[in-house]
Length: 237
Image (cartoon, rainbow, N blue to C red):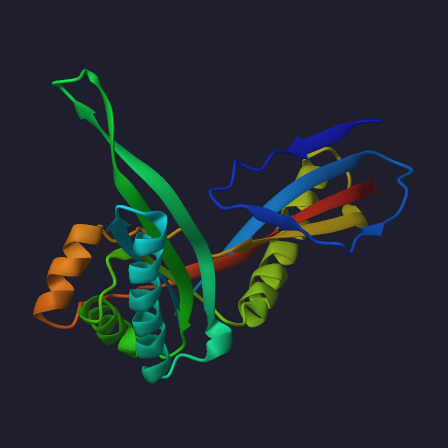
């Protein structure tokens, strides 16, 4: 059996295999293709990571201070109109802290550090800068950055799927004709989704400085959503 294969270059984003597949058996030579199509769309949600870090000589004291600040932070998030379903605790850490003592040539215990972080979804992205500003104003010490996204990627994925399928058939037909065949018959189809290109993270010091002066300027740009279609065609006379 003659087999022609066109490999797909390594994708920059993680792909999620789709469950649905179409498959038939081949009587003649086949051509296998992987076609990736991405569609750029305007984001309609912003994912923000925010939190507070506190210090104390005892774990209890550090945790108590952290809890008070976190309650204030969450209250502000809710006051900004963020739905409670869009607020999720992402991590609470309590860690002993040490520093090197040159006099004793040993580590010296300096207390405990407690950090608590939440992930929140801003659905009115025009307010993203004001949300960052408000979070810092009420005591957020940790801002992990912004991830732009699309709440419903299905329409863009449908567009990418249609384009990828048409591209795949045209490529397969070209291979078939170069091999002396006149047409192709679809044998197998599978797909995997790509969901949004990675976004750069804001530097924490820049965020905090800007937010203390005026509303943080943000530019959402566009995000990409797409699909990889794996196609196998039989070459036919």
